[in-house]
Length: 367
View 1 (spheres, rainbow, N blue to C red):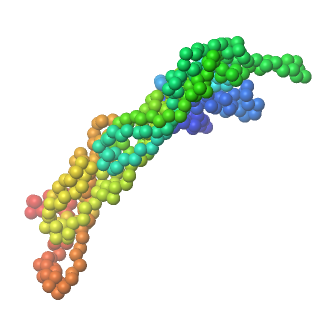
View 2 (view 1 turned 135 degrees about the vertical axis):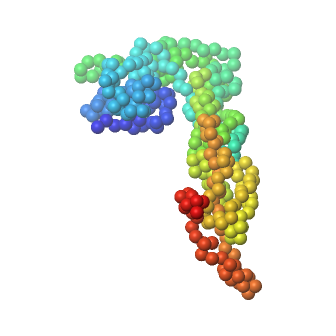
View 3 (view 1 turned 90 degrees about the vertical axis):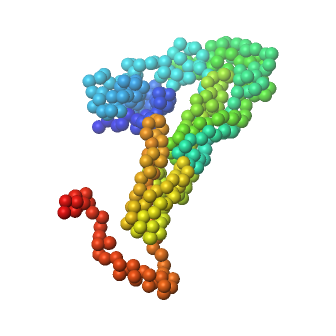
């Protein structure tokens, strides 16, 4: 039985194209037969390649998400190095360059994660926060290119501008040629004539960034907000990583969230529950009034329409469910006891019967 493709690549079902590609490259470096002599590695590599081929294409991924492996029946399966698709992608994954010896691409910046704390009400209404966080940013002196001001880039003498160096070694079966990224220019083929003193030619220095984060209304505890390009700077002008804001919602003793609904409990005296009353309850938007019907029972619910959380899609909003807690008083003196006894004499069995259902009420209406 085939394993789930998302499980094979080790990604979540909502992973984007970049995450899926990154996961496959990681698997390829580990499992490809050219780099892993384990007899079982080839089968695992083909499984990963098949999963990548299905999930990297929007059409086949939609079919797989909807119908599973059955949705891809009749389509030619991937999973072979020869027919996998882009040979360039595989070569990049193994060696950091390409099949024709061109210089390697500059490495992009790392992603950065920052946590943000919200109140329960802020998670319902949305809020804008200013975040400051430490990160490896572009050097302000050389503007990220690694060269000292007034200097320029020159061809790397170690690799002759190729970005790669070759080493020849002799063995019992003859000569072996090994190609690897140039250690001096890191595969770029050029380097600063005079490195920037501030960043030592790397183009990056520790810095503090400030960014305004718009937290959408209805966000839940544990969800993340992605802000592209606000992570760590890439090497010498390469693309920066992304910022991920992890949302933490503080608990509020007045409320509990259930999906898009808000649940709150309100305590009322038994006399108000018996005769009916207007009570004030807290909501995420402020206070609201609830009309208790006479004979309200413990744990009865009253619904405030549209007082819950808005959907992140912008369509619809939940309700607030108010659960009634009936408080029974303690009789402190003889006068109070006598009053309760008189009340007990007035109330008969009909006062304690269960609420009538719809059909019972219909029968009584026609009597």
